[in-house]
Image 1 (cartoon, one colour):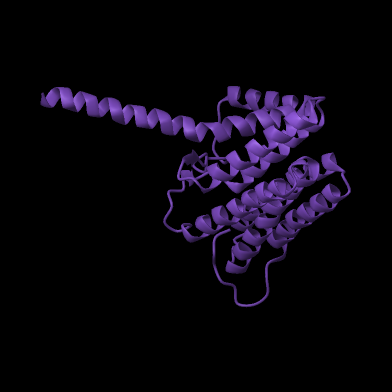
Image 2 (tube, rainbow, N blue to C red):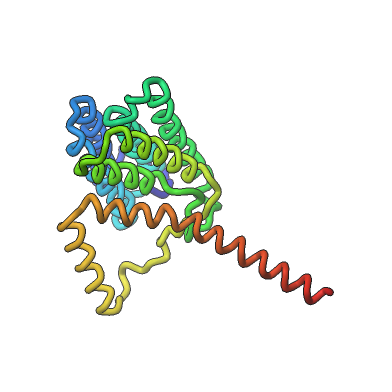
Amino acid sequence: MKRRESRSGIYFLPNLFTTASLFAAFYSIVASMHSQYELSIIAIFVGMIADGLDGRIARMTNTETAFGAEYDSLADMVTFGMAPALLFYSWTLNQFGKVGWLIAFIYTAAVALRLARFNTQLETADKRYFQGLSSTLGAALMASFAWVCYQSHLPKSLIAVAAAGLTLMTAILMVSNIRYNSFKEVDLKGKIPFLHVLVIVVLFVAIAADPSLVLFTASFIYAASGPTQTLFAIQRVRRQRKVRRKEDD
């Protein structure tokens, strides 16, 4: 949420949604402690929805404050950092002993670093892109992966190795300088083609049919889009350099 000081007190509505996100994250942690992993996963996604609404409501109602921005960032640390990390550790990473909780901590630290960098670059960063995978999408990738695996019948040892690899990969992507599309330039108030409405309807139907698989697929595709675009950009620059060298020769 954009930082703008208010004279006294805090605005109720946007901070209510931030509190709801924080409550969902706390509930997720408690559920993980009691091995109720599916409830923990769903709570993380509920927290994401609440977090996505608080900033939009603040902008719509012109109630953006510095307090709201700080509160939102602190809540994000719990929702997208602590809750997914503790979910993974309690669910499968504990099989690795000390290494397991160290992997979970690396993810938590990466979220903290990602949020700190985002907050310090808020006024200067290109709004069209994120620098590194956003903590929201990182948590979505983690939670949806856990959801898919929890509903599968794969060997626990295989799931543990895959979970450890995904946790480290997500942490690296969040603190990297890889650019991701933010989609903030999308005009939600303007008109859209009828075909786009049909695609949205199909997407909702797919999520309702198999939410875990659809959410994981979408999160994985987005997480992979940054490195893929970076590789294409590097190849394009190399081709341009080769063309310039040939022209100089």
